[in-house]
Image (cartoon, rainbow, N blue to C red; front, side, top):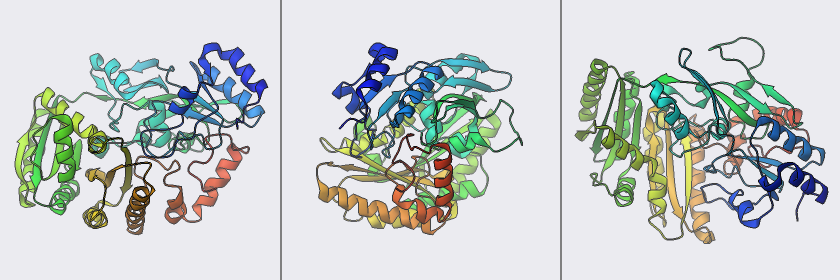
Length: 458
């Protein structure tokens, strides 16, 4: 049953015209992300084109207590987009303007619907780039909302470190800016960090001011293989502990390599593999490469191979970014279940070995991959969403992996976010601090209209 009154529906239709829709197919598209989570469709979709239109939509919905769910590129993995209590999906994909770029200050401001690939295309001729790369061509607003990171995080950090300020529409429809363009500030509460990672539960991000970086003079990549996953992880830990500033350091287990070879038409050696990328000046990159080569060989690595030409590097990283789809493609009509955890680097080897144990006998295709430079790794499963036995089996493995990560000082999610998929682990991870989170939610969104049913336990 729709939570939209006929009056609200008529008002939204009058304001937005053909940018307001209750068509079933469109609502279904906006009620799910990329993963296995059961869709829950909104009652309507509004395509907005400005902060003012977001604010107007929120004000109209707030007056009747109707939930609102922000929608960007639709690439979320933990059920963030499901309209568990119905309501209006506010699609920001048309808010796709790069508002300004300051090459001198190495920053820019973009509308929330700008995607990372679109932004980097815009910046390329200026010799600049935005390094946060979660793999999918996600929207910048969605990346800020989920505190995304990805393959470059080991050198450049996450969205937390790279967002300078935000424009946010609050649950009342009020518009605020959380900061300026200064690289640091001691003025008041850090509202920017409050909204980065809030998953649309406190407000809707409409503009983002970001740090930028110069495109490195030299970029080199390398692959090496290992006979066991613990050898590969131990090599990665040694690289981190020696402080070698690699830009990317990715683990792909042999199951993933096999899937990637088939999906991306590659011929990588089917062994547990580390992929590296090095950024900097030529002399510095050469020094990094030789240090990493020595560490790899000391830990049993072999076949240390270069991928220096841009087309080779791009093919390698595109294959890595397609890992989710490569695993899922092993079965017809499968959906992906991608779970991620993050642990202290010293615990990484033990956690991945433990995860391998949890996966023994798993009846569905599964693979381990990760941004091992910062202790973040993933398991991707290809599941039949209609087979409850499979869903239950993977849920048990996921639970074991998450709880083990938390037990060694880690987190239930390093970059995917909580959404609906990781709610059950929030108290185990944060204890009584969850109560303070609930107080903040209640203070900012007392009627609970902002993406309800996400992050916090009911």
